[in-house]
Image (tube, rainbow, N blue to C red; front, side, top):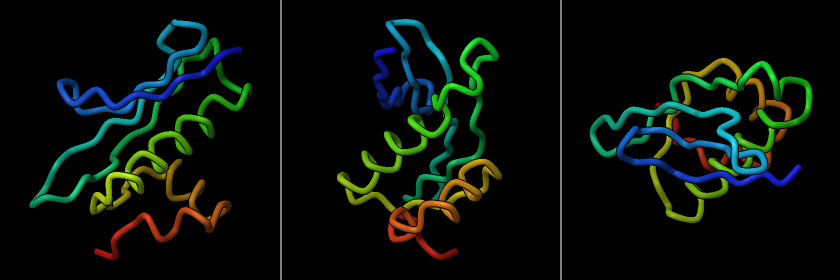
Length: 94
């Protein structure tokens, strides 16, 4: 399965495409210059295949590269960052 994570600023979300099909997204808000990651959703057809983790990695890698200020309120992403402490530095303490 070919996975691609892209930011869709018009919809305020990071989207993951699996073989050109939308497989999930991370919704975000922008508050005082900070990107707030609020919700992660993966289509049921792709659950249990690592799509959520690939989406989290792709979004957090892009945010790190851009140097954005990031806050996380999404429980899935909070748990992901706990399991992958290499992403802790991406998140701004709030």
